[in-house]
Amino acid sequence: QCRVYQVHKEGSGVIAAKVMKEEDFEYGEWQTGIKLTKNVQNPFVLKYFNTNMNGEYTLTQMEYANLGV
Image 1 (cartoon, helix red, strand yellow):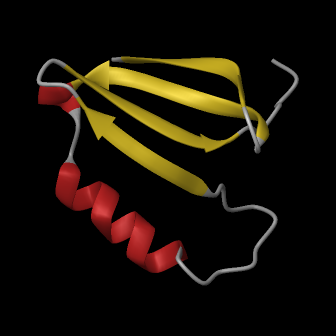
Image 2 (cartoon, one colour):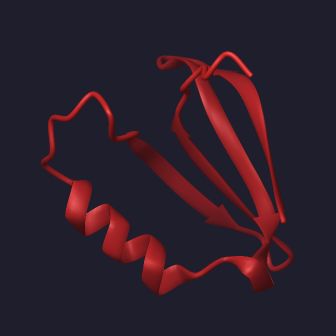
C-alpha cells in the first residue's frame, strides 16, 4: 500500500509525493520505468524527479496529475 500527497516543491511547483513502505518498493521495476521514460516527451507519461529511502519508507517525487477524483 502507498499514499500519494499533493505537495509544493520549491522550483517545481505542485508535485506528487508517493510514500510507501520500503518492503513494498520494487527497485528493479522502478529503475526499468526510469530507463524507459528517460527521454520520452509524452504528455501521458509522468515525469519522476527522485526517490529517497530512509530504511523504513520510500518517498518518490513525481509530476502531479489531477484526475479529478
